[in-house]
Length: 302
Image (cartoon, rainbow, N blue to C red):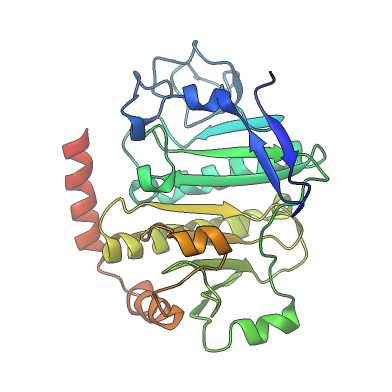
């Protein structure tokens, strides 16, 4: 049997992926954690598809990398890559300098651009067990879903619709982005980051926008660390179609039988309260306190 199969339910036309081999992957949630395959010293064990800086760069050595991209050994799509955020096993988004977050986002763009003609490029990040993280070394996944497979994902509102969707919900307009929580948010503290420049795939993002997005993403993770505790579980993803956006979902609730059975989510957090909390901390958050706790937690783990 192949590593995976895309199967369509003939009744409701929704798609599922059958991938029994993924049950054999290392998973900290199941107590299966090998010696980390992503840490320095393991470079010869996995074939790289990309690294920065390249080995051809002046002074570069096998272990002098900042970003590595590997093929996933347990794929569920024809192209399935792992983007390793840094050599540091313990340092998550909230603990990385902005320059490294920019480099991660630039890698997202480059890999998206590399594969966008091959299918629908879906980039997503899982943090902590409750967020679906199987290996703790911080990384992002990129999966290319074949064209013709319908992705059940919300699109970004049109500029006209946005006025209604974000009424009283826009908290912050940076130079290139708006940050908002729709009234119809499915998850507590769900946040959308949408570019002001509309109608583009993520591969069209400019360097100046990447700098802005790195700041916004880092700031929001700082704020949610303050709200939910350090290393709270969350996911974020980048919409794979035109009119891209980035969506952050703190995983602070467990779906119940009603939600799983009906597909109707029960949101227990008023999006206005989310906006209010972000507003209180976005401009002048207690960064010194957060950074101190981050450092203490980092050193404890390391």
